[in-house]
Image: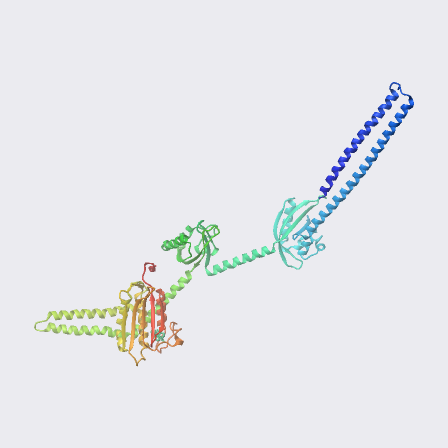
Length: 593
Ligand SMILES: Nc1ncnc2c1ncn2[C@@H]1O[C@H](COP(=O)(O)OP(=O)(O)OP(=O)(O)O)[C@@H](O)[C@H]1O
Ligand SMILES: [Mg+2]
């Protein structure tokens, strides 16, 4: 700004100087002419004009010359005075402008929300702005002349010394670092320091440092780092890793836990090949199908598979992913993969324990049905004996009646087979066979159970009504386990009707297919019913209202039905008694997996 004022002024003065130079030139020429005229009059040929005239002319000329000279001297003096005044004014204005600018910069320096320090080569504070001093809780005077190290933590001081000496070794180059500073009250703040050394006019090296407060950013970074640590810890504890997958670019991101689950070292990039390489060969095709379908449909997916690790061990994992759209409109999945090996093992162990318990209860139930079973076996055996005697009689005749004898032998074979079948079923129930699901007809299983409880029904004067839907689709189930469920429900029904004397004791077994295409079996009795208080506890293990009951029949039934993907429930009848029913899913190709 000062420059703007000074320049036009100087231009004016230059113009004036030119004008006075012209006047000087003109004056000098007139003087030279007068001098030439005097010389010519003195030394030239004698003038023709009289001497007085010449003297008058010379006098006038001298007068004129002296007047011109006086004017010229006067005007030059005035011009010089004006020039000097103008220059003084310009200098004053420039000084004022400089002062204003300095004040402005000082203002900026003092109140700029940046801490400024100027330290010498030994780290002594030469200057600090009041904002900076205030931010550290000091006054400017408290810091001046002190070592700059006092505003740093003891453990960070070596870093400060090193950083300052790097600046001193590289004059004019800017260096930056992040460090904590300590306030007078002992609290800390994080700063980013930009520093460079410069040489002053007196040749002294100084370091200029500008510090920006980055406490908030550092705290946010620390909070983020901490939450990442917590997340990683939570993932490690829950054996759940996370992943992201951008389908178009094929970019896959894994968390640390996901790398651990898949048994890979942490790497910057992950490929689908790496995933498939680990999936158990028997599960690979199915997993690929799920992933291919999800990537083309862009829908959430959820699947379980096994991993075959390099050491030959097998892991069970469960992955679930949510589909989203990324910024460029492509499909992106964000998901979690959980190592469920331990859970699977626990489930298997539980399953084994349940199977053992189920076996024990089956055997116990058979013990209770011993009389009934004995009767079932006894009946055909008695018939065998009777038929054998009849056969003998037909043969002992004078003319043996071979046709009749054949007929009785056929009956013997039929009864023998019937007794054999009963024994077979009892053996099946007693045997500790591992559960094996196969497609089967539910109605057949009902028939098999009925054979074993015929006598029980008869001795308790229970009327059995079978309402079995013809041509039911197959169900996928374990025959022995299903027999156990039906047997339990039938025995419970018989026991519930033991106290009934005022009405016929009727037990209805019904099978049909419901509107959701599930197969349904109901066992309906007209017994004592279930007290409202007990309704919630029926399926709890060891809940019984019977003096000789163990209370595990229904809990085993429920776990068996659950394992078949069905549901077992109980409800009170409109009239007296209770209805138990269970559903089973249809046997379909998909269910075989
Ligand atoms: N059809 C039914 N009607 C009324 N109550 C029933 C019926 N079936 C079961 N309950 C009630 O549910 C209880 C539990 O039945 P659950 O079959 O689990 O055990 P339990 O029959 O008592 O003994 P067990 O373990 O020998 O079978 C029974 O004690 C009984 O109170
Ligand atoms: Mg029972």
